[in-house]
Length: 442
Image (cartoon, rainbow, N blue to C red):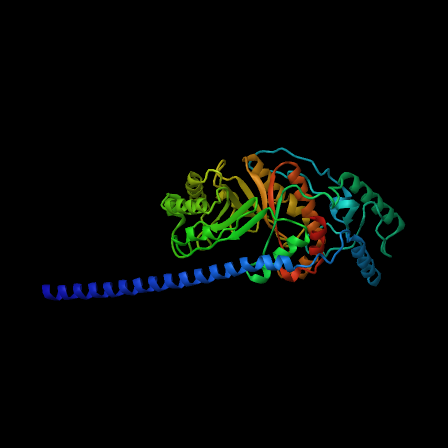
């Protein structure tokens, strides 16, 4: 009987050893595949870097003249002549709110930094459609001009609309002329990491007569040992270097262990690699891993990363990014790492449709997050904004660009804005949103 038990134990040990050998082989093969992918990605990045300068030099001067409004208005009038539509009038125009209004409430429910008002563009131009959402960009006219009434409107209705437009213009003063360049740090980020999109981002920057002050890079790493290597590929030369990376590698790790400080040495090594690459003041955007999301565990992990990085790089800036609105998988506020830990609250404000007033003043809207950041001693950045990828409606949504331009100006005037990153896919280059960006941000 003892011999039989010993035989069973021996067989179990043999099976266990066989399974462990298979696991070790699988892990080795997986690491080899990840290393091969990393080398391929690094080679692709190097090829992109080598060709960006060539792409920039080959970009022709903008085909749209500096004041392109007349040509756009002519096209809009031609479109109107083919099909008469009733002008879009947002509800806000009927009861304009002063643009600089600030309401103080308790810290738990921040209210807008400034109330929304209909969009007025530079040099006295305004867009007829202020939704910034699914409504297409309608024709825009000089401020104070009276839109042509549709046949269904009465004379009294047209007079009321003219008075409303005049009142709105006075309540919402013009931002600036297009001859005044934005004062905050700006940049253009590719919508994807392909060579085509990176070259297109360089084209947009050149057409906007912009020397980008913000350089950004997305970092993914399969294992901790890849992290210091990524620092060597980080962009240099811009005023702000924004590095976006997850809190954990793709292959292993947990937020709970990170929150206990088990990975501090890995992040210290990353910070030392950045220091060696002479990037001593990066903006680090540490995101939650896609495979695991526990708001409280992520907040604890973020604090550990911030302490480890700033122990090596005291001038590093910690960024915490949220998406505008309430449609996320969890309440972002529950994942707040804490006052004094986060330096910048960054907003993802890509055009996803919907009403502009809600996007600005709604729950978890743009102004809600500005107030949230200010009450916690943090600045604001817009880490991604522009036409929604793959949307023809968004590609032609010029009012959204106008509204974002004016909103950015107002936040910058309150000394709350650090930078913005505009993204535009190459397929959206011919749309009215792209034309509006090139004119408003010159």
